[in-house]
Length: 112
Ligand code: 5GP
Image 1 (cartoon, rainbow, N blue to C red):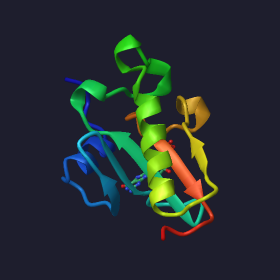
Image 2 (cartoon, helix red, strand yellow; image 1 turned 45 degrees about the horizontal axis):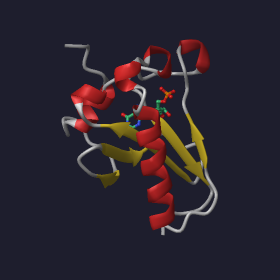
Image 3 (cartoon, rainbow, N blue to C red; image 1 turned 90 degrees about the vertical axis):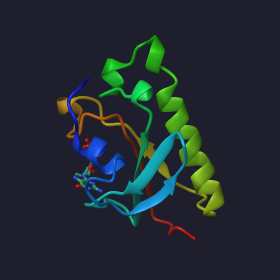
Image 4 (tube, rainbow, N blue to C red; image 1 turned 180 degrees about the vertical axis):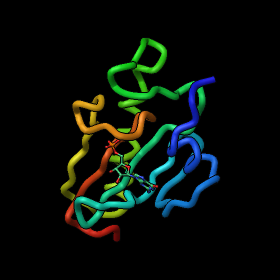
């Protein structure tokens, strides 16, 4: 069992977060220190989809970045957000602080 990160605790509702979207596969919540008007983090929920970083992807988890991107795209469409940025921070030297793969979703548009 890998180390429990902050985002495991958010996923498991052990610490609070402002959740904006959840289904069986992903959870999206507001970043606590937003760098855009709308700054969300998308994570995969299943233990089998857990990967710490893009740097640690394997064949078994190669689908996870695509899953997060697809859910972010659907979320944007559902909320009429027409322009946004998607980012992965990769490794400490890439600015990654939480080692539970997450997609940053940034937009100056509001969630409608
Ligand atoms: P990273 O730099 O690892 O790609 O991004 C981690 C993000 O998690 C940062 O943007 C940071 O603001 C956010 N963050 C850190 N602690 C918390 C927290 O307790 N709750 C929420 N919602 N976001 C957090």
